[in-house]
Image (cartoon, rainbow, N blue to C red):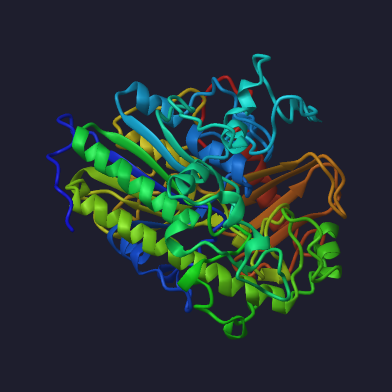
Length: 527
């Protein structure tokens, strides 16, 4: 059944923006990038119509800090949300607030993670560096209770202002174990959340990784991906009816682990058919000690959130299941884009598709995330489709904070306070237009890992020639010659003959660190 079309959205010609975000999806796990197994025809079609920014890097390969970077157009050291578990300060200038102030209607569907899920008033404050791990700027707990309140399920939380979003249909957590407004969506359908979610209700589990790879009891139409699709299309219908410019954030909690594709998406791909990545058996001879420690404990997933070295069976089971999650997201993207078209919004709506960060997923024999800045972890997909712009492939460097800057320009707005990201709009349809010469990546953790003492502080720079990662307070590091070693197999840190590359990369690292200094009184662009 077709949807009634709307007239042109805004007489000023301002562009609507639909931002689609996936969680922990690496760039090369998509069909248009070249994955030979996964089927993503709808996302592939977006790439075929828009601009594929092939060298887009996350500002930090962790959910909350990078999401804050996207929506503030600043690095984590500048906006302050440096690690999962912190909150973005309530008065932080955001892209969303700027759009709302300019007359845009704004709405969030799905994952935010600008605040911790499970931290409520009374939790111990952990000091990290110069700031609080769980900050509360005004003493009433408001900085970190919004998402916690949504998780509590005691009552429905109706958002009217959340960092500039004027409404939200929020999801918390991952896989089938999603909470938040999804809980109430299920309840409205007569489903008791507690009786259907989690591994204890699973219809099937993988014998090699049962806590993380399983078939949920939820059917496809009740799974969190279906919720995000449903509420996104409902928002599009309402925007088409009202005829005002909008910024709609559609944020899927998948394909982040646990890997729980429902119904027909489970079993689409057999673990036995999953080939091992070509770097799976990387001996990591000169790798930093925390990576060697993971490799020495192969198959031991000690912490549900930290990285580890999977067995072949664990990797294959997870890969087969995640392909199912990705294909379900692709189907949802297809329905959402179809709604944009049938509502008559296509000529007025820019569509951006991206992910917050990657996942090692077997590369170098590693899995998941944290303190691993290999390409699989730090490079993300980014497609920008703007009506009237030609399809193209742009190989220039870009960063996730540039997405926020691009959204501002699509809305005809200038920069926001403290902005460090640069708009990519000139590069949409024009592969010759690039905005930076390198990518700069931060990561911090307040706790130790085997081989890394707390607090952990990492800085990485990627250029045409190489990748360098420096660990604060440590003598070891990582230096890769990407021209001769694109698979990052030979760490040249401290090796004879690497001095010239080392000096060049250290210069690039220092340059980018200064360009994003949060104490710089003069706003500067990175690159």
